[in-house]
Image (cartoon, rainbow, N blue to C red; front, side):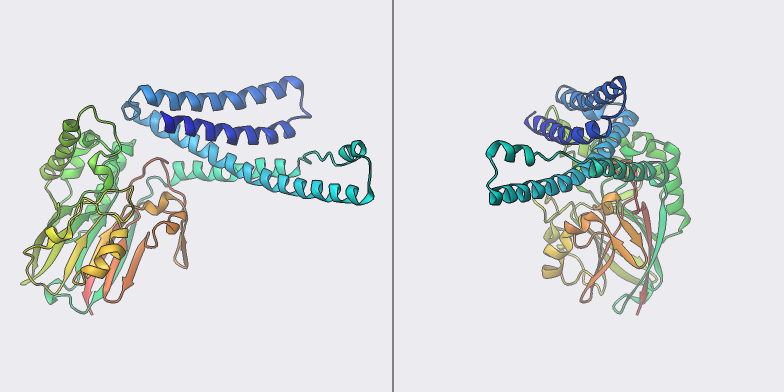
Length: 418
């Protein structure tokens, strides 16, 4: 509840500041029109506050999925746009402050009477930056709207060819399909899940790897899609690991037993689907007379707010010597924090988690997203010495039901002997 009050107060301060621009721009309109705009402005804020309050007394995740998803999207879109207005108002107020200081200094030097000085330094808001801020606020709003309507399900297959000098000859040319961060509870259309699964199967990969976050929080999110999940097949197998969302850590459970049952059901769903879930385990994969090791660990993050359930020591215990070792680990921060300094035998690590923040610029010559300031390795292929990391951009979405610039990804690796 305290967090909710802080959120409401923060949004109120944003609205109070933006209201200055709204009132400035509408001051020449008819009084009835001004009142309508002002009432509508504050009714929206009151509605957002009511939503926050309702989450204190109801299970937000039990709300209708469509309503919940798009309600969050509208609120996020509107307040991102308002932050743009705030930035322009801050610039306006900065220049007003400078003019105010300059005027006082000039009056002080001229020794004008105090009353006359106060009248001379009264500086009103000019309105230009207020109007410009409101116009520019439309850019993020319509950009986010486009990301919802046009990009949420624009699945992109990325072909990645990686040479390894130590790859066994029997695995030369092996094709591995990776997908990550399905967040299947966010999907509003069963057909879209089928499209994604069909695209993965169309790659005819030798092995399919899923690197975590099958659900947002609840195992029940998968119930509608059991047939689609079970249709994923590959000659060398379908393997998976857990992501931070899979544990149900972000839900208030009535009892600890409910949380355990939820995780057990999620594991059962993957087992019934024919997936081999690796919880701090490894598997020996054989092909054409050669073998490699596939290691899968539970979520391990170098950020305190995300869990460290992964145990590399346990996962690699008793692992046979192999010239090539592949690791599935949901969070890419694990690579630099533990894998690089301690587990030199890991040749390739596959991760997800970041989603590319579902927002950014992703073109062949340049790649940028705000998430890079939190995760140095946030999308695509990275190398440190002989070890490599690939970060998948995620197949689904969470929070904002769309993507801007960073499209949902299915990665197909072709490993070749260098």
